[in-house]
Image 1: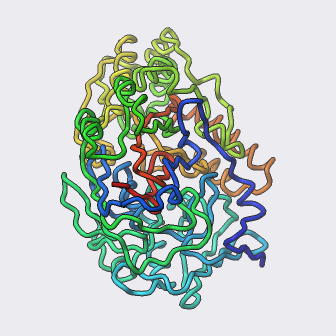
Image 2: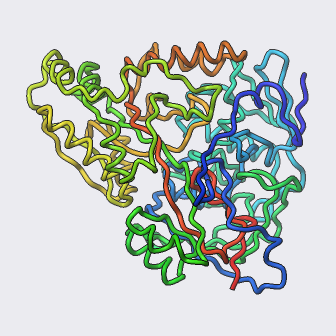
Image 3: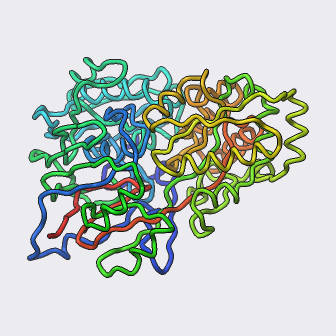
Length: 531
């Protein structure tokens, strides 16, 4: 076996990920994973607040980390739960609850050695039975994990050792264990064993903060976990040292953009997302730092089980008419906050980036679209677009798509729900046709939700086989060839249509120090709020 220690990742895993990010002269970029508004060293001798309020722009349907789908969920969950691995600022998976791991010579067997003395929020020590139970549930609940791991099981070898035997080598194993959505959080075995189908009944993790109260539609109150066992390595992304420097955090629901911003202006919130219209109101304030974050890409996802979009020609018609520039401008209102990108991966992730099939991207060809609709036998059926107004990006993007479809004679209607209900509706193949939304950057193609049968219902044998090949490739040239083939076919099959990548502005009061943003999600360990 080859042995990998937690202070150094070598070989395959380190080769798979690249530094990504952007910057400009006026802002600190959070796209690379780190955006600090200060460091703890700046605060010596200054009074520190015990409580922090952090705004949530979306409702929270669940705090179960294995089921967490949205931004607000992840914002809370990532500060309460931890996994065996965590991403650093370069999207490299590094050990968190794992002390180290071993990978067999054939690349099929992972042996995870656990840290000793790690306590859950209920005081129980974390052991292998907890890890195996958590990860076996996670891989069955999370579409990304289920697609990658299939029937493979995490098994207990001894109290501090867990083994995963794979049927084939997989280049995405550690990345899957690190991803921030549908998070592979570790919980006590008894919590897993008593979980209901709709989620766990207790929220007990190992993170620097523990949940005290969840008052739905109002706030989630977390408090400092006094028995937290921190790593001593440097804090980086969501990896490394974590220390709760505030006693209480109130993750406060504020779905209305104007309300969130006015609360920031009144200093009720020390952090807020900033629209282009509101940017001039804060960018010259001496106590405010403006961050520019590479946050999400936008995709149009088809319901492949709907009567209309089970027909690939109808999907191709939509892809043909879409004007990506117009849609992205409708989302962010300025060319400074978007970029065109024909790849389903970010270009900074060079190992998996591919432009295969780019001739089908941003076609802006209404005549071709009309002919494809005619060939498909489209006869005025209504296309249902699923969206929410809880955050403006979903709704604005959907409006732009609706306008472009209607211009080629497609009848449309928009079904608008609160965020939590929209997620439920999205899982029902009988109630929608098209969904347009933002997606957190995947570190591997296997983490593209819409390539899985459970998300938009991409139940296609060739797609599944190409996805499998992209995860089992080991050598760089094999990875490139496999991902070129996958993306070329995706642009033909069209589980989804890539629209582009977006940035956002956020504002941080300079008395909030040590804040780290990772793909827009805050790591609130190591963060101080000065009085």
